[in-house]
Image (cartoon, rainbow, N blue to C red):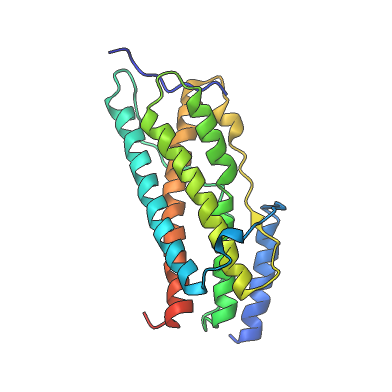
Length: 233
């Protein structure tokens, strides 16, 4: 069997509020604001509870698909003759700067809106990387088809989940449209002439995506608990 090479072609509420505003102003300097045309037409007829149920289901699907894609990638790395895999720590993810300080009193509207915005920011931050992952893998000689197909499905499901979450936010905060997504600057690594640089760029992306999909699922589960069960779960 020919060796497969992973090569790519290319203290009080007011005080808490003030701290939150200052922190978020600092964090937003590290991310890029991306104007996005948003259509909620597919979700207009759904209630808030139905939207949250749908979002939880989709977030589970995305997490599981990502875990499976990561598993296939790692097995290919470990069992392909000639491919070595040194111990390596995960570098900082491009979504690491995106975070919100949630007030301890967890006022429903205030807390829920910020958690929604954080989750939307996390998902939106993967639109560009996932597009390039699927594009670059499609040009990779002998690339595992399972990885390519799963990456495309994940890309589509993240777009669907984003639309659902924006519809939820539109219900709890009508008219909001200032979505902020962290900037990904890893394309140069995917297009590096050095094969190991390209390979580890993929490795880091898959690791970060796996971490973020767990975070998204956790956030959406908390949102359902807050909005559906009023925190009694």
